[in-house]
Image (spheres, rainbow, N blue to C red):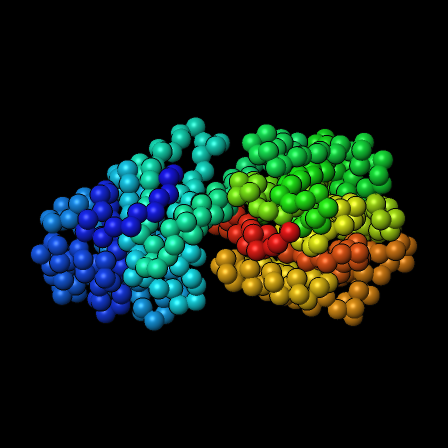
Length: 495
């Protein structure tokens, strides 16, 4: 898809479809008024009929409108103009893009010159045109015999809000498209079945990024290499599987070599049966989504490189498959992590923290500015926040606050839970330094407490995406979250 800035009156633009906003109470925007005046009041007549009121998300296609250059007009309901905030703007753009994709059009234009988003700047709105258009274009057909027809639309242009600088608007489009593509990349990796998307497959995807972007270098550690550096916790998860675990390390060099990097660490359990602590059969197919944290890291690293982000970033994926077999780790087993801490494994279905803790210890060698891990870690996060909000815990309040703000700005929200010392004792073990579960209460917090034992040497935050990473039911599929939050975080950093 091509995204272009075109500064032209809505009635003069040459396109297959021009989209204009009508506000609540049938109040046309300036762009809608321009078309109305050129066409002999076609929009006014429609609004007087009461068939279109301007309710947020409402749509209407007008064909063969005389007096304008566009072949079609798409009316978009914007709701109350004074309440047109970021959330409402994104809802309007997503509805608009979905409507356009159903049409047999090669081009479309969003006429937004007069539009003001109450809590965002003009660059944000332009960026969301590309981001939301990419996001809603995603359709999965990789493992289907009948493939989807390609979208007919090839180019989307935008008339940015009045006063926007052209270079700023063009970069905003590029940034939005890159983020949208990264969201779709994460969705696609998450949606692939576990017999395709194995730890080795994830490693290949990371190596392919390396080939496409000069700023990226990728290193993949084998099980033998992990064993040599003492990653007993991670390897305890893959012990029961025929699939070899991988530690994938992707470096983006966007700043001086001595500039400390920002690090992302993704949980990449490509299928989670629960191991010997076997999950129930119902819904177990959705455990292919247990690598969505890894998918978000790989996707974000591609976007960081594409946008030539001027900082150093390292993406680490701890990839393994958790299976029951005669070689699988058992409840009651004790393993030694890379840090030297011993762990009593009370439940083999609490495996995510085991792959992450060794990856978080590995991170120390990079002397990072910040570390953010992303993991589908606990059912307790789903019980607390449902699918709307990502759980956030951190050992640094400034980092946590920044991530919350990034979530709000990117419409990919996270909310902080406490990481207090009072919860640490729930992980006490009679036989090891720490147990891998803390009992039935405060599961999201005790899981983060476990990880915090391995992150004491740097500023760290944990994003539990168990509720936000995928949808169940009729809309079953990966969401691509929290890619936009992660990229907002990284793109706002300075070397």
